Image (cartoon, rainbow, N blue to C red; front, side, top):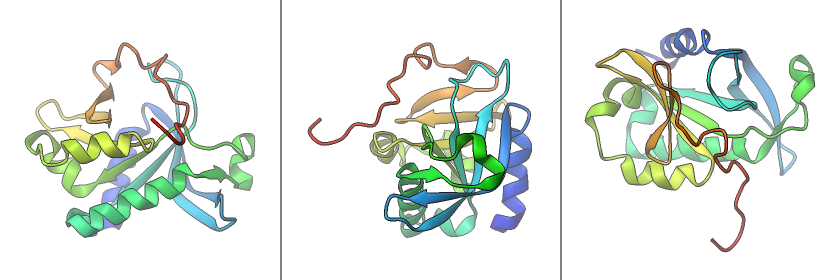
Length: 172
């Protein structure tokens, strides 16, 4: 399966719960124009904290350790950028609350693999989360800091509305 094959599969699962704008331009703090796969915003009744989020979708190349690291670094770049797209004018100048990464390997095998848990905790502190499918229930799930943040069945975790989305800088 290629990345081009994987993107519509992820978006098909996301669209019932989120408004999706594909291929959205952003402006990195360095001034460079970058493009994220999608900007997503919860639909009414989604039980997801309000705001605009980024979604980056990666195919098989992100399955290796080096590929996964590059995909995470790319998401961190999006976290440090603002929306800058004429089709998305309402949110131009805003930064995404979080950027969620969907990789083919995590999509298919996430519930069985614990090897990512520590890295998920680290990247969560950089405002990057993970999108997976829970194979047993075939449901879309978003994880942040190695824990369920939201799922189709259960909605947002109990503290999601008050979850501190403010970026931490400097000493922690």
